[in-house]
Length: 346
Image (cartoon, rainbow, N blue to C red; front, side, top):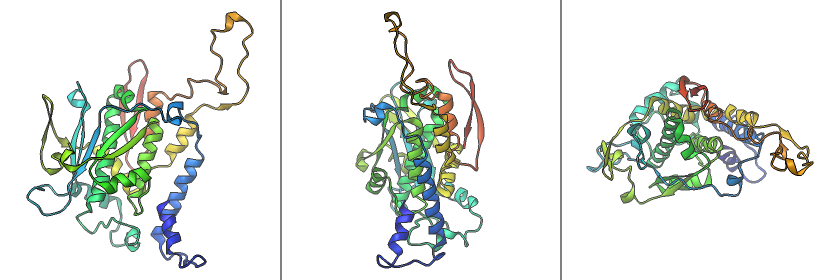
């Protein structure tokens, strides 16, 4: 709702008026934000009882994200690099995150999604935007926010490739460590004043709905940031007796990030979540007629079946597959004990 709040702040006085069409980019972003809020209110508000009572267990392994700014320093050989790190005990080499991406690599992808740079509407709304594609650098706070989302999206791609990891993150409290206080404050309040960076927090919110978990961003001092070496050109990380080699973020991760930043999340994901849940049924539960039937499991009150309320792994990742609308790739994954599911990375 940051664009709508900014429109109110631009009105002179409490009874003033703002000329229609004066800030077209701000108007369009405010409408998009209101559509996002509308989609949330149209959702079924029911959640898992552990999330409702704030009883979700905390995931023991922590995710780390960091970025290096564009300051000229001998200790910063790779300016604009965003790094992600996630390891856990006895993890296979293909089930950890040790990746990085330079802003110089993302910038051409973002520019490709925009038709004409000189006529891009958000350039004319300098009071609420902090992304000027005509410049090659970026403020450190937004680099840190980008690294944070890249880490979460890389984690989602990792779970799609290895469905057994899904139980590690669904209905859990996921802790992500960041050494930028602005980024931590944005994630804690759920609000970024400047666009298009407010769209990244919407993606995090949708990920929490899909996984029925809580993503908590905690501040950590820079000297204790484990992903800091990756953002400064180091290509190997040692965890105990194991040694991991860094690689680039996956192409699917970069495409999802660019689409989320330029277009925002696809609101169809919220509609599909509501439609996939069980139909409400407010008939009283079946009465037990005899002692012999006391061990039978009656229908849950308010719903036709408990099993239809808990989404399967297949449904869960089908929801995730529509985070954005301009890129799609079908990946067939065999889930143990279930049929082959076609997952769509968007």
